[in-house]
Length: 109
Image 1: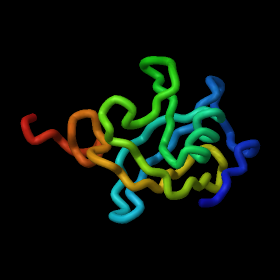
Image 2: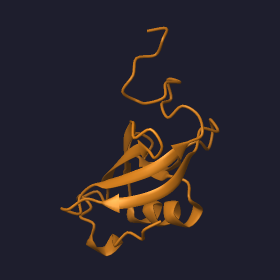
Image 3: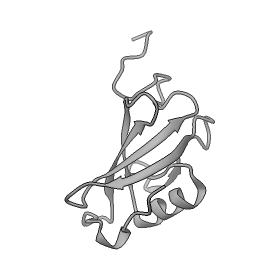
Image 4: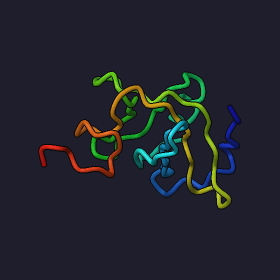
């Protein structure tokens, strides 16, 4: 795994940076979330994606309650240092609706 140059990342005025989670194997875009400096460091240390929940205003280990963790393979910052790409292996559906990605409609919708 590459090591992010976290000091170069352009966090917004709330200390957040968008993170795109992409399935390492299928290349499907799974979800968009946000991270802080601290959650990016924790993600690298634990090899599980940790985000910052804007709605709950707290740290969010993806899968902590559902078991649907995102196993971290690699983190890459973009050319402007204002977005991070997380290459992951999902351990179950990425979306809280039970779909593989957050960009699908649930079957019962």
